[in-house]
Amino acid sequence: MDVAGKRIVLTADDGRAMKAALMARLRKSKLPDKDYLISLTEKAEPLLDTGDLRISVWLLQSRETELILQYRMPSAAVGAATFSADVTRDSSGWQVGPVVPGYVHYRR
Image (cartoon, rainbow, N blue to C red; front, side):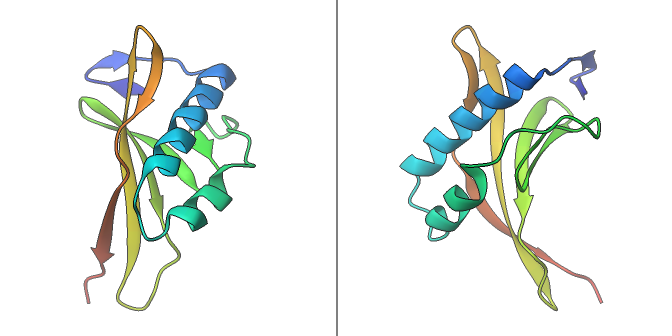
């Protein structure tokens, strides 16, 4: 995965650490869908088999200078709810920022 023009390599241990940080963040959140998001995430093992890192419904994506975990809920006719959180690594390990809700409106 490329972030800010630099190649980073992720391992299964990175996936497990990100999952732990995501779960801690979800448990602290006040999101209306908090319990649903926790239930989807808590029992899933992070997967790296497609070249992407997935944690259940969450996909790790690179956006220019940052990493983001993102989940798009199943689509409705006009759009879909989304959730995203910044992911960083510091000297203490992987950190997940606040989970931010959003909505994707489909064009007609």
